[in-house]
Image 1 (tube, helix red, strand yellow):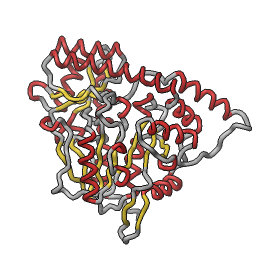
Image 2 (spheres, helix red, strand yellow; image 1 turned 180 degrees about the horizontal axis):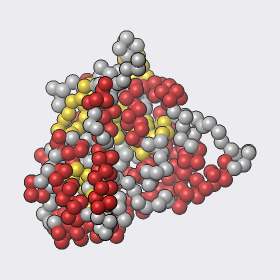
Image 3 (cartoon, one colour; image 1 turned 120 degrees about the horizontal axis):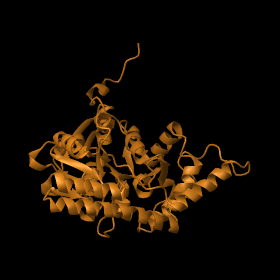
Image 4 (spheres, helix red, strand yellow; image 1 turned 135 degrees about the horizontal axis):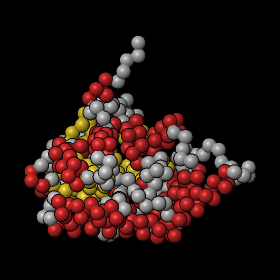
Length: 398
């Protein structure tokens, strides 16, 4: 008899965004006359950059010619893309070797798959509120999870508590869902904590491209000691609009080593290489050529135009919320606005109110953890027209 993984019994019945989709679909079916503005899921709306499209079209043509056709590629990514990423980090003053970078189909996949490297006896530390994937993937393995609270008093940037003994630490900066971003000094405190506990930081940098302030780190590897305690996961989904194209990368430094349960010294870089070559066939050549173009001079300029578009959406949203005296966080270093529900409403209560009264879809903060209750996340990834219309509805009817 096949015995099932009973840890799945400890998960909520459906993933947060699936639950939202079901509610919205039911509303649309009932109110076909209403124009629903979706500001819940962090999906981009602008098309891929012209240089990215051109590179992918060229790659498609190459796949149709025998001499340039590509079959199986390297599971860890083609050399041309890994070298482009080495240069990208070098421009930030961070030196990496190409074989410390692993190309993937996105940060979400790697956030879940990276847990293959860790024994289930590990204690996992996550901030609350938090991206649900961090929690759910570890519940599936039956690991112990402890939380550090993100609160208005600490600007939703919890700091380490040395009374907590954690083995694996999830950090996301700029943060999803709150939009908050750690300073270099704050990240140094987390690195110092991880080193003191012999722990490993899993650093989600999916929104690093939204950072424009030189005092806010775009990578944890600008912090002293990080290469001996941190893995960085990043994505092109928000940087370059690859949500449907799927490409990301994970950095596992050579200097990151820990012991196995039997006392053996383990290189996490070698472990991840072994895992990927066993369980992953790599990202398609066509996609990687498009990703390479993202990091060209022209590609970076085009992507910054896209990011500026979303930044302006966020500015429009923040202006309206400020005029309505609605307390909010984020929006400066990320595409997310984390607002406090008015009139003391709960997260799902306010979600329903916005949907029913204003036909606007947000994401209930309660879906991101206990400390998310009473908050709601809005995304700046919509079109300019939809963003302006949504803020007009909020200004007039909320």
